[in-house]
View 1: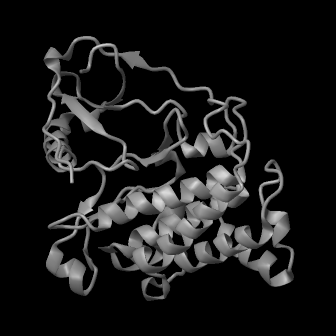
View 2: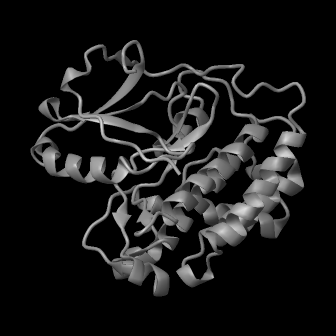
View 3: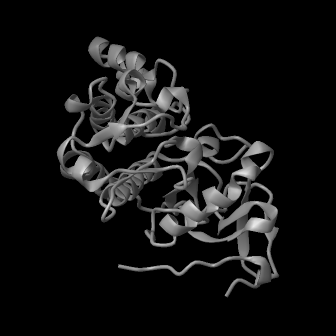
Length: 290
């Protein structure tokens, strides 16, 4: 039932609007088969006005919340550990999509959205690339002519070779994990964190706005993030067996230390939204649930 439901519209403008029909066909076809609690849900498309319709995420982007834009409350470390595991879970879901794994080509904090309960979901999944299964199973990479994404989150090996693979996303995840604990811009962040760990001054890198950081666990997360952000793909850990296993352990630790904390008790200021009350012009694809 769409009536009285708050929706989010993503509009295509300018020269991008001309390509909207082709983009829409691909996005709706692929995303209509995708549902996961850590993925932003595509509800439909409105070709006439050049827009896609998504579920509304009340607390905006992780990027806005990390930097407390709009004077929003600081994200506590417990919630940050939760978000880290949720991002990893959603990412693994993309990589395990059958018959072809999906690689998100614009993974960054701005494309991680938070709902009214601060559950994090990966957005802009219309930007992923389909990786042929024969390639994904053996060499996990194949040539690409172009990609989206902020330079700081793009796999350095991709920048050199133009070859895309599922470990492309591991690099992006590593940078985001470092930002989760430092709330610092991504430029040069791996170098700064590595240096403070070597000097024994890592505590200085932790976001000072967050009280009572658990030092050992934060350090563990930082070291995991640095492994994910290794320059060579072969040096990065496996997402499912290594990265997510550690992120889930840290999530469990956070849950054990959430006494008296309500994750959604301080709902952050949200961007403007529009209610859509006429569904006649929308294209609603069928959704498949596992």
